[in-house]
Length: 370
Image 1 (cartoon, rainbow, N blue to C red):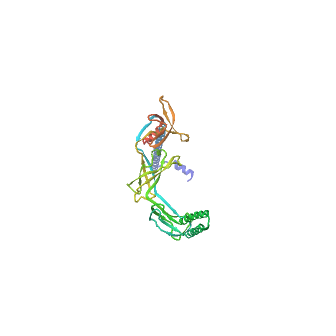
Image 2 (cartoon, rainbow, N blue to C red; image 1 turned 90 degrees about the horizontal axis):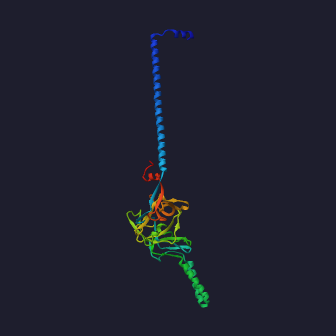
Image 3 (cartoon, rainbow, N blue to C red; image 1 turned 180 degrees about the horizontal axis):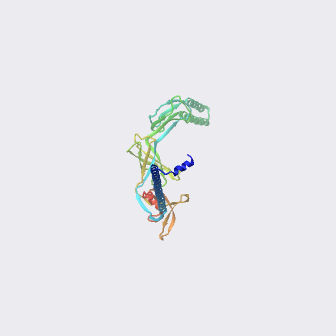
């Protein structure tokens, strides 16, 4: 359409239908524009509200955390008396039981095995013959020496006869070394040999154990050793024997202790079970207690009052009669649950002073910090 024609149409008066159509189009555009503006305003309001809520939440929460941190870091000075408790003390122990005696039987000569006279599970008496190896060369050596002794009695000197008698004793020992005997009454626990095997001197052949009694070694802390003595009773429980309490006694206390990797002095004390239950066998584990006779007096202070310095030196602040505080070196044993036993350095009813944080108070009350 040419420009002149378009201008002519624009200058032409609109018909009634065209005017009506134009009004409808303009009204529709106005409604759409109004709806868009309304939606924009609503979204702006929502964004403003959310932003304000987030800002409020973070500001308030930060302030609350700051107040909590301030409370946690606040310390208060606490004074407490050194308390004396009197109670019955028990020493907890654990370990495993062993046979009271064990023999790892070995040949002391080399040769072929000519006899095995026991099998696993057999009961033996002290002195019973258990196994033998070929003794031909040992008997031959002994016979030759005996022949030489007979000749020396007729023609030899006294000194030569004495030397031959010594050689005879040695040959008799060598002959005896071809046999293995039981050293005590017991049970054959293991047999590692059959006839015609060839064994070197010093090789283990069989094992005998004495199960008439059982023993165990338990580790006792150096602090608790002051309460332990030979003949003291211990009570043991085994997972293998539910509901059964097995009595034992302290049978041996060594003269030398040892130092653990944790820096603790301990003593390996031996217990003996005199009449063990039939189904209690070596290797079973136990837990138990040693009960200290009589009442034990103990000085107690809060563990929070103790400070540990260089070299593990522990100190506390003590309030004197003038109201002044001084540092004092003490020896303690931690008992758990916020308490410690005073071993030396303090007396009953002395006043100990220390700083206690609010955070520690919250923890003891089971509070999460608020």
